[in-house]
Image (cartoon, rainbow, N blue to C red):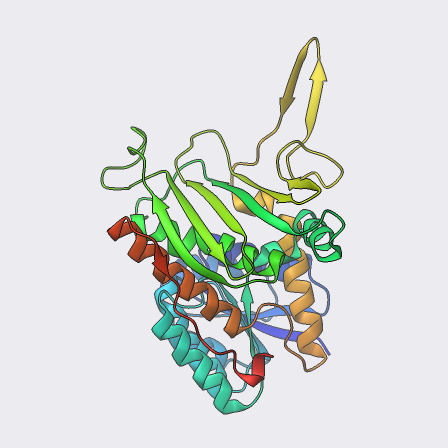
Length: 341
């Protein structure tokens, strides 16, 4: 069976997913697209046989041949789309953040629990990146001893015009929140945010860059440099400092290519730096969507769950409070429901 997918949101991320499903992903097709901008949706769907175009997400989900939903709209629109998909019994891959705040994510989780089965997968694509997977395997095997610290960098060329200081946490550092939990197998218990004088290249009112500190229940400490107007490229790095050594990704090239192609010639070294996330994590997105399609066709939901989205949202909520207070803020603890055990 070929899985018919309705893609909700045809902006930069949604358009990339439409292209991916149409030309890269096996066992799936784009059955419908929806976007408030009908012209944009039509342009994205052009040339895709049998793909209907809508301005209402509900209409796209109801379109003939739709078996599953991929949500790539803006964060505030996710909750309604998720609940609508659940009501129709449709499996969902939802881009992060699941919702902009823990209260919304909790409502989504309670709705899924009432169904008694998982339907949603959260798009934390770093779990599918080969470099991150290699690092996770090293840490899981314990060959370097216990992980003591993670040093993370998350840099963008420039932020979009609508980007706010809180979005540094909710839309960017949310990736490090999930990656920390996944890499270490530990929960984040406290967050602190240090704010240097903003870069002169940051838009007025945007507190960029910032240094975010996580503490975990396993005794690890994680620092995250978030800098969304660095000017030179898109760069994501992570170094694990363990008892008997270190392991790092994204810094100096290597077999996984995460750091970009490194060339040395005439006494100089140079590396191509990706300019956005769709380039750096292209393979991860391909693997993520293919894994979701394969699991959905088997009648399963795998990968990051709504619970993982909720845990990350709680961390981000503490992070935003830490931004405003300048103090160390404890992360609200919650019991993991049996559905997500």
